[in-house]
Length: 612
Ligand code: M6R
Image 1 (cartoon, rainbow, N blue to C red):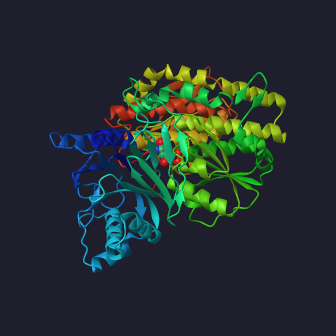
Image 2: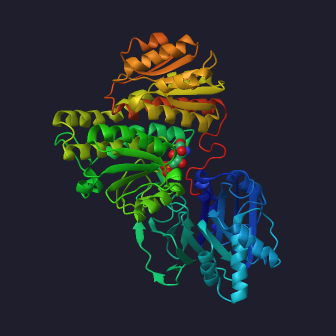
Image 3: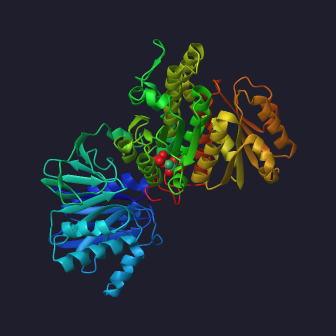
């Protein structure tokens, strides 16, 4: 939630910050703002709405400065408005701050400050933090760095903050806990951002700042310290990312580009791991810990949103192939209840961004209880990747569209490989079945490509049903989580109410919704549940629901029950979810576009949910 950018060096800061904010807009787009420091004076500009609106409002202004900070907001405390936008300015006007996260104990701090005579111009927790810092600095007559350190020890919550001080014209003070911060190292200049996308075109050398670290950043100097004021040697990493990964590459939207990238992202995920000739799967994260993983008493999967759906597919597959009990937990529930986590448990964390606050905290909790943490993460170097004991990257590349697509299929491919690797080692799968599934998995990119070629047909179905008020998505077995995923995708980018259900469960309530206006999407590929789901189609048909079915090529029965049909290539039932989700991604995309939604930035959402 919220994107932050900072620059200090010889270049003009504003264009760098503006471009960076546009790249980080996926993290929030309720409002944006910049603070520029030049000639010992802070100029702060902010505007409700997207970054383009800020840019337009600044036309003609003198924005010359070699140091500055910028923010794109996903509102938490206070409605989206100009006055609640960041940067915020301290009571004296001397300090400016941007913040990603939530200060949980802001209310007592605010009360304390009000009693000292402070007043506030916004409803935000951030303005409270800033004045708290300033108050500490005044009372202790200390440096800003010292005041920040004292303040951060007293606050609870999550933050990544960047601060400017009018009286220190070359320095940005930054700190993080729970919200990401990357510092790019240039020649005589430094770049700061929530992720590497604003930095990549200037330098590939970066430092990922850790929780409870504070950075003092000047053009020629980067000092990292912990909150105890001890210096830490910055660990410089080389970015493995190209500019093309953060550009639309001729597509109208990032989401469409990412959907179309899937044949190659899935291939990238399998490459170097799956080898048909030798009949092997090589995954260092699994291989190095195979005894612990295959002998786990239980696997718990912790994730949110689409990643949670991937976890649900994994539950079915791991239990089937590895015979290890699996539980799938919403990270937000897991972290607050009192779950039983034992030493012999393996926790699999699934996350595209690797920064989802609920997942991160859930893992910290499980780690404290002695569990082994395995991260299935897309963003390289992210917080979840770093706190995991071992892991496997999904290698889907930078995902920018708020609706997760290629990261999901990457997660499914990784989880399938993990299950196969564990099962063959454990002896819970026959050699023949193992080899058959390797071949099936290797064929996925080609099958996904074939579905993408059918996009025009899927678009016509989207146009036919775009005005529906509600949708139902039904699936059974391995395709049940895909029904949930289809419903989530449609909700988030078309704003149509949609529900996903196990097809048989529909009789226990949702069937009451069915009438001639309700489109019901069946994910009914040829599998061991096929006859059962065909009966469920009959039940919907009998109540005049409109059936859109995702079915296997060659199926002759389902089309007779369906109003609209999307054929997909045949696949083993364990592999089918990676393929059957593709038409649902396209269906949502085309529906969202037909309804005029900004599908890359749908309302109220943010790509990376770094607040709980
Ligand atoms: O980055 P993560 O995978 O941890 O994110 C989890 C969810 O916030 C995410 O999947 C969300 O549900 C997507 N917008 C779904 O498209």
